[in-house]
Length: 200
Image (cartoon, rainbow, N blue to C red; front, side, top):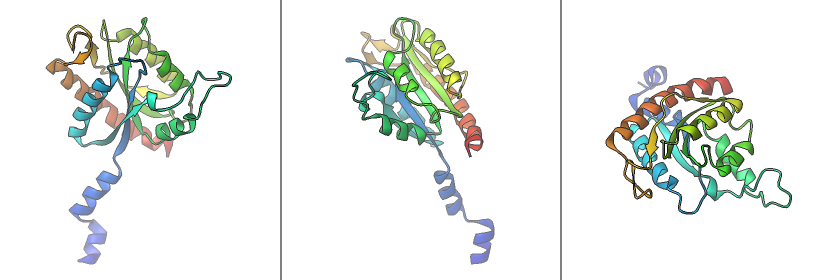
């Protein structure tokens, strides 16, 4: 029996192996501003993602890391090493993106610029919000991700400040948005799995 188990494996071993080989997907909160709603959106995405059981999902908050403007003299960049470490551990990402002045936040752009190889050959999905669903910020982010060799998927949940938020602050997404998130993750996971082979 022991020989057969070694040869063919057991169902328990198979389940353990699946758990061990799950990809790590970082859900990155793209705003550090006071009064931000990105933690609400990020928690919602993680709740939906965890129900899938197809990856290890972790919320990564840029605000938790000291990242002054890149190259700024005298800035306390003590969080840079930890930022590099957490991003390097991820196999893929979901960016929670808010639109400010037709683009992404300065904090997100700065955080992206801090690293290079840690982003390379990984997959990403984007969940955005704003007056037009954060569409313009998303298009800016896509260009940046392409330069960093991050493969961004097509499906893009776009949340409206008018229909998915109450008073612009309390996140109450329309039911259809959950389907959009799952469709996005349906693309992120296989792309992540494929790109894992490129990095190894």
